[in-house]
Each structure stands twice: as C-alpha cells, then as structure tokens.
Amino acid sequence: MPGKTYSQRLGVITDEQFQAALNRFNLGQFVRAEAIPSGMWGQNVFVSSSEGKYVLRGQPHFEWQFPTEQFYIRFLHERTSVPVPWPYLLDTTTDIFGWSFVLMPRMPGLQIADPQVQEQLQPAERLGIARALGENLAQMQAA
Image 1 (cartoon, rainbow, N blue to C red):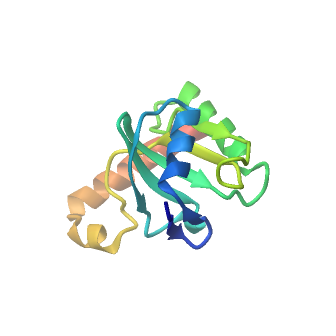
Image 2 (cartoon, rainbow, N blue to C red; image 1 turned 30 degrees about the vertical axis):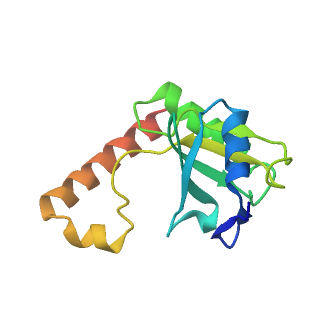
C-alpha cells in the first residue's frame, strides 16, 4: 500500500509501518494518522489505534536525543505532578522506518501555539495558562 508524507523530515510512512510500530509495544490496531501542523521540526505524527491516541516521534537529530528525552520525562513523571507523556516508549532499532522512534500518549488539551486557539482565549484563560505554566516550572525546578 502506498504511504503518505506527514512531514518533510519523516518522509513517506505507510499504514503498515504505523501498525508495526504499534505492534512493537502492543498498542492495538492502527486506525489513522494525522500530520501535526506545527512544532518539533516535523518529527511528530498523531497516531490513533484501537487502544488510544499517541504521538509517534521519529528521525532524531542525534542518536542521544530520544534517550535523553526519555530520561527527563521519566524524571519528571517520578518526581513531580507535572503532566508528561508517560510512558515514553523508545525503540532504538531502525527496521521499521529507517530511524529510531518513540511512541508516547497524546496529551489532552489545546495546542496553544495554534493561532486560531490563541484568538479564542479569554484574558482569564490566558492568566490560568500562565499560572499553570509557572506552577509546573516551580515543580520542575524543585525536582
């Protein structure tokens, strides 16, 4: 089956490749994938399966990128109540995509980098977001 380009960085990915990645971690049957219009240099794709919603992260900039991210996400998960995408499932093999990849839970909420979302935020909501970010930063610094 022909694939689809979800970002220039990741190139063409087939449904079969998504299924193989989900199989690697027993995450159910592939339903669909969606390109993510912003952020992280085109490394991420939203992936839905029969078991949940995930982010596939691929084509690392350096071989240490994903292991380092996994270390810090685990650290924050274990030592704070800051919301993080845990578990951060890392596969360092390259047999599925030609590069290592991560599958992690898709975080709930709005993407506040989206200009359409920003336009709809009321001043009280903006203040609440700033407060939550500050509280999270304080927890991260304390850890």
